[in-house]
Image (cartoon, rainbow, N blue to C red; front, top):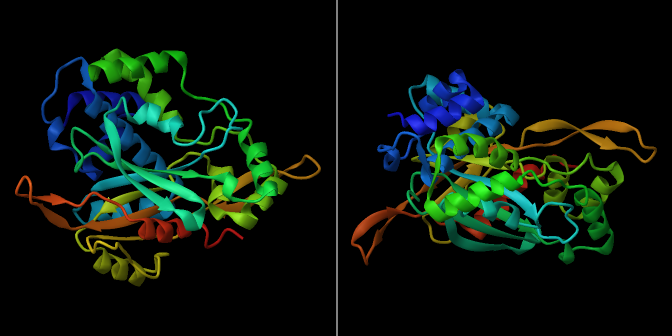
Length: 342
């Protein structure tokens, strides 16, 4: 099934070939089976953005691309469950709003609402999930985490300020006004949606300058997660395929020689199970002590897998997918970018 509005948005931004591939690859929300020509709803724009961000993740994760290609070749598809990104709640953040505020200003007009808070105290972070109000089970959620530098040393905090103070804000005044209109009306003209989509997509990237190698080393000593942010910024940390049996998939991927996490993470509820590949290694530039650019290999993004059991909603008397997350699971999954950092 094709929604012409979503298709138009993707074709203009990504081209016909990638658009066709994405429609073959990803689940598509049943709520978008109806549309109005020339008027893009918040759900349609949210779905288009998610599909673009999924493609961007595959561009940066060779293992994720290989898995996805295998799934399509075998006649399957990907159920895009959620994407994750990392932010820093810190006042010295250049032009960019600190922490998750840089993204809630985008997500809320698109129809996403807070769906859970998860303390990640071992990492000095807080995670929050945002689900779409119009199709929470079918439009991919966002797991949006904030790192708290005040929980770390003074040296660490200085390095955070050095790295983030050069941040630029990709959201233009025009985009701000379009997001305000979207939040008010729940829709935009197709012309405005075409203008807005590439701007909000550009927010999911690194907004600060090339980090100094000395600052990176200071961050790495105390937080692999902040070191990752120094090189990757606010890009998708991972994207996740919802599968029927993550335990069987884990063993299958290990048998193929893929860099799979050793153990599956299980939630305290017993209804959410997650595993992942280790992060793909990427080459990134740093500024050395003498001002020369150097290149190092560091962890990039990765691909995750999740199984969500269904539970009986005793108020509505119907079965629903458990869309919650788990702090312990998240902490374990986050280690996928730490294993090869040092």
